[in-house]
Image (tube, rainbow, N blue to C red; front, side):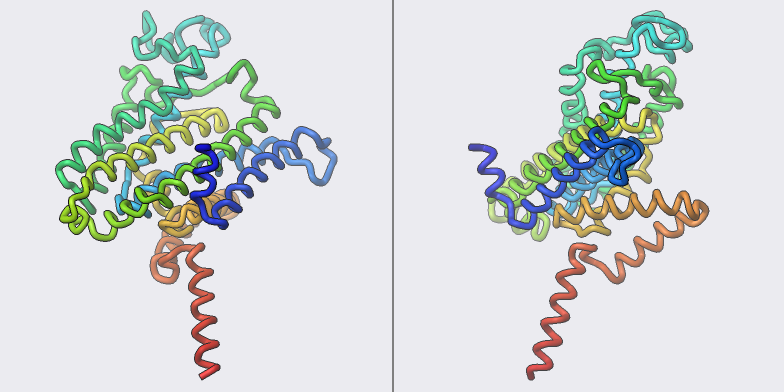
Length: 372
């Protein structure tokens, strides 16, 4: 019944897009697992890894679009939630190494042995169990978002001031995680993962499963986001975005609306980060970089703010361009990124998704003029 409610709450375009995401998540792993490498339709494991990474970035972009596009909260700190989810998964993966590490310690990860840790820090306990790590992937980013949002929204911090606070938060976390005494790998972070749920993270079958899981999670997030923004609650969210003071005057508790969507988007970003780590094989403090949060906002702007679909398209488009340019013209990538942002701001204010509407509007205007 709940699934039917969520599905019916979406428009036909969003439903079709969800099915497309699922089709990609099913087809690519099957082409990798069922076809021989000599087949022209065979999908190599590195392609699965790359697409899986893009799908995780798309989930992060969707989380940003939910708070920025529909609630007007320009967050510049969602990379923190993404990284926290990644660290929770990294801790689980490190506990799965056991005595197979370079130092052979069955309890302590290699970096702890190197730093002369005598016992496992208290916050590492429980991460040897997947169910506990999965709960922490959602809980830790959500609690941070709840604490930050509670104080910020109750204090009526908005606009650029809120953006600066979220950026300061992720920068402070980055500096903290660089410290070796944090017990989380310091500058080097965590890597050399072996298994996830008993399967080798390097195996083609595991990569195929992770790619499918990333697509499935993105599809679920699209359904949830579509149901939220399409409901009466979502209408109130957009009203808060467009006229917050008027909503307060009408008696709405604006803080509650903002806090709910902020925590929900943080949880989504945390899950995306957790799926990202086993596919790239490393997690370190650079994931907290404020530049990563700004880049996620750029994905949403390129695709189309406040459209859900646009966030996913923007994440794929920008990251595909980044992958190609860093290989073909590595010295020009940052200039291309800056030019893209300027071009979108000037010529595509509604992003790639909004371009179709603009073209249709111009065609309708041209036909009206011709008829007159």
